[in-house]
Image 1 (tube, rainbow, N blue to C red):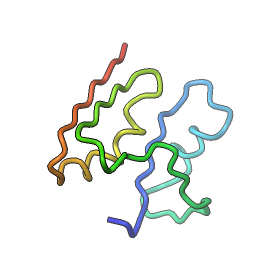
Image 2: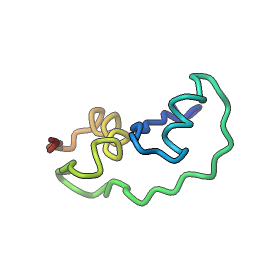
Image 3: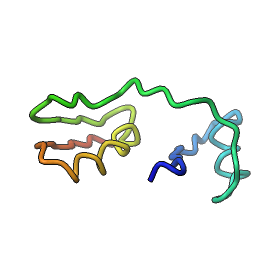
Image 4: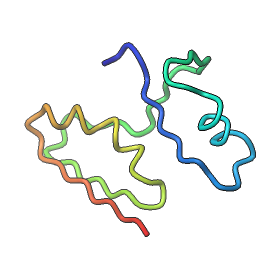
Length: 83
């Protein structure tokens, strides 16, 4: 669905505004002013396999790729490491 964005932000205990604001003030359906997307983590279309290893940055950056890969014939794996 390209008609909207899905936003995932972890609430940081010591937040100075960003994550706390999103969790306490923004509700589903609210309109936000944002900049244009900047994909610095794009899939390589010619790759035969994708291996994702999620660690310190969490799993969120990988979530946008999952629907595309699930509907393709490309082999992929996601490994999530957490405490």
